[in-house]
Length: 127
Image (cartoon, rainbow, N blue to C red; front, top):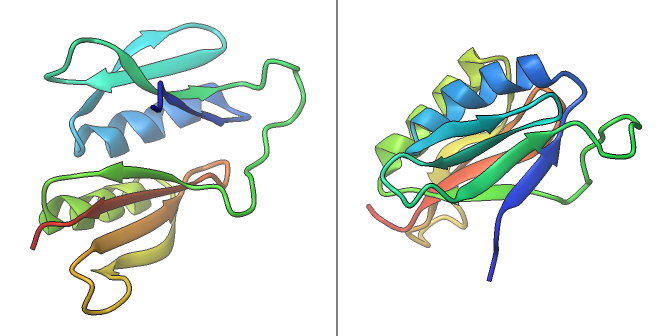
C-alpha cells in the first residue's frame, strides 16, 4: 500500500549526513541524490526507493507535522536501541529510548527527532 515516505529538510547536506548514519543500522542505503532530495533503498532489496529526505518543492521552509511519525520495522531490540543511539550521536534528539509500549505488549520502540524536527521511530515485535 505504501509506495515511499518523504520528510522535509531545510539543510539537505546535514540531513543526508544524519540519515546516511541512522538508516544504515536498519539496512537502508542512499541510492539517489540530487540538489533537492536524497532517496534511500534496502541494501538487499530490489533498488526501489522507500524513504526520501527533501527540500520542499514549493521553496518554503520545511516543517514537521505535529502527530506525524515515520516508523521503521526492524528485526531485533538490539537494532532498535542502536538506531536510537546512532540518531542521538548524529545530532538528533530523543523522544523516548527503547522500551515496550504499552508495557507488556511485546512491541519494542524507540523514537528520535531528526535535525529538522521530524519524528522517526524504529520498532520490533521480536523479543
